[in-house]
Structures are given as C-alpha cells and as structure tokens.
Length: 517
Image (cartoon, rainbow, N blue to C red; front, side, top):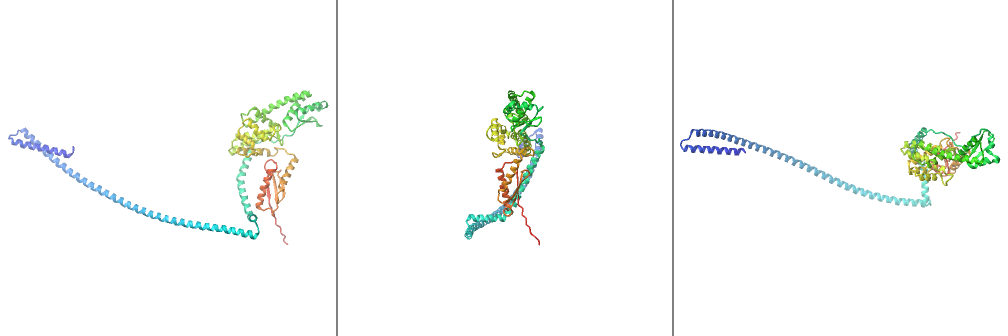
C-alpha cells in the first residue's frame, strides 16, 4: 500500500471519530468510557495528522530531488548529444577530405595512364621504325657485300665468336668449375668412404689349373695306351690336359672354370684310386659334376646369406652359384658381384636410396653370364629373362637391365649399381688384360683424338685413364677448345670399349719468342 492511500485512510478514521464525538454531545450525556475513547482517538488523530504532514513533507522533498535528478540527467544527455554531433561533423569533414584526395589520385592515375599509352605508342612506332631500318641496313649490307642472308649470318657469327670467344670460354669454365666443385667433391667423398670401408681380396683367376702328382710315373697312366685315357678324360671334361717335362705337376687348361674344377677333382680322385681307364674316368667325372652342382647351390646360398637376401628358390641360387665358376678379364664374377653389393649398400645408405634393391641388383647384375654360353643373347638380356622367370622385383630387374646403360637409367638405385660395377671392375688388380690388348686400346684412344682437326699431338697416360691432347693455337681458340674436348669425349664413348672413366684433357699453349740483339 502506498503512503497516499495510508494517509487517506487515516483521514477517514479521524473524520469518523470527530463526527461521532459531535453526535454524542448532541445526544446529551456521554459516558466516561466513551469520553476516554474519544480522547484516545483525538490523540491518535493528532499523531496521524503529524505523520501525514511529515509524509507530505517527504513527498515534496522526493519530488524536488526527482526534479533535480531529471534536470541533471537531461543536461548530461544534452551534453552527450552535443559531443556526438560534434564528432559526427568532424568525421564527416574528414571523409569529405579523403574523398577529395581520392578524386585527385584518380585524376593522377588517369593522367599517368594517358602518358603510358602515349609512351607505348611511341615505343611501338620506334620499334617498327627500327625494324624497317634494320631490314634496310641488312639489305644494304647484302647488296654491298654481295652475300646471301645465310652467308652474312655465318660471317657475323664467326666474327662474334672470334671477338667474344675468350669471354664465353671463361664463363663456361667458371660454370663447369662451380658444378664440379659441388658434385665431384661429394661423389669422390662418397666413393672414397665406400672403398675404404670395404676391404676385398685382390686376385685374378687364370685360365689354367695345376694338379700335383705323387710321382712322374703316373703321367704314363694318365696318358694311357695310345692316349686313350687322356683322350677320354678331355672328352668327358671338356678341358685340355698339358703334360710336359715339368716334374711333379700337370696342367689343366680351359676357359670354363667349372669344367676345370670338375677335371681337377676327377683327376685327384682317379690318382687316389689308382684305376685310370675310360669307363672309370666317365664314372668319376659324372660323380664330380654332381658334386660341383651341389657346390654351386652352396655357393649361391652362402652369397645370399652373406648379403642378407632371403627367399630365393634353389634353382635361382644354383644359377647364382654358377657365377663362382665364371670369370671376366680374370675377375671371378660371384666375388665381383658380392663386392659390388657391399659397396652398393654403403653408397645407398649414404645417398638415401633403398639398400635392399641395390644389394639385389648388384648380386644379379651379371646373372646372364652363368648361361651366356648356352643361351643366345647378351648377358644383360639373359639376366633380365632369368629374373623375370623367378619373379624378381621390377625395381631390381631395372637395375640389371640398366647397369651397362642398354636402357636409360631411371632410378637412383640403378645409378648406384652401375657405379659399384665400375668401381669393382676398375680397381687395380681386379681384372687382367694382355699386353697386346693394352697397347691396342691405347693406340685406338690416341688415334681417335688425332682424327679431329686442329689436334697436333695426343698421348694416352695413366694406363689409358687419361688422354692429353695438344692443339694448334692458330686453329683452335678458347671456345673451340671447350667444344673439341666435348666432341672427343663423345666419340670415345660411342666408338671405344674401356673400363672405368677416361679423362679428356685438351691443352692449348701459346708461346711467343723474340730475340733481343
């Protein structure tokens, strides 16, 4: 209930009391109890009247405070409104200034665009004029020199090469030196680390085998009556038996190491038994062939176990083991393949390639040489067919097919296999070469270099690993010197057969002499 309703109630009560009192006096005598009640009501009425007056005073005070507060709020609102109005006017002025600046920039851009368009038109006109002048100049030169356009081009080109050949040669040499510093150093470091980490025996296989005899008396038994025993032995083994005056030994000669080994085992067995006759020779040779076949399987297993290659079938292991009885330039192919696999694994680990693919590719790269005398085709083609028959991984087959670059090398692993093959075959003492073949190879290398115009002398040095070429300074300039070295290297690659890498060194030396008198 609000204070106003409370005051109205009090006033109603007071008015009723006064009316009752007046009514009672008019009705003559008022009892004592009534008079005391009336007095009490009058007192209450006075109290209520005082409270009403006090409430009215509070109401007036509250109304005054409310009016003051309303005035204060209104003035504050007017102040904020004025501030916002001023801020808006300021922002509006700033936006108008920016708009004016943008308009000026647009005008400047339009003006610059017009100037650029005008400049482009001038450049196009000058270019067209220059083209016409160049054509006119060319026509005049052709008319004066009485040369065709192709002849004039050739003359200008020759003049430019003569004038700028030292600069071009210097730039080419600088680029080549920069490339070699980054690539050859890293490659040399990798190869040196791999070769230092792997130590292999250096031994060449010969084409003959020596068998020691208990005495010279058995030579007659080996020969037999009218040479029947030795003829039967040579026919059964496929080798040649050389019996000379050398005491205590005979020589088994043949290019097939497996046949020589069978012959050696069979001859030792016959000498131990003492029974040497054609029937016995055929029997013993047959048993030794079976024994050598088992040895081939064992050699294949041992090579795969050494390199950590599991899962090959026995037929493939036997073919791998046959490489133990095959040689290339006196180098045992199975030992060569195992050596390659160890070198290739080290190189692959250093270069981030897959070592398993490299190891398998190195072991199987010369697999075709185990059957090349029985099957037609190159050893690369035969090796690829064998790998496909035994379902070797395609990545490994690619390494086998590309190790002599018969097909383009398309993987880092194939590059590593080819590099390991070159390292293993080119190291000193790995392969044997006759003195005639050696001199023939050097003469072919020198003759190839001398076939180019401008070459005065050519010398094959470092066992045919480098050729030094001296050119005529009057016929060969600096630029042609670079071109000549490249052409000679390409011709050597295409026409000659050689192990490893040959360095082509073209030397252009100019000497000027004067006499002081």
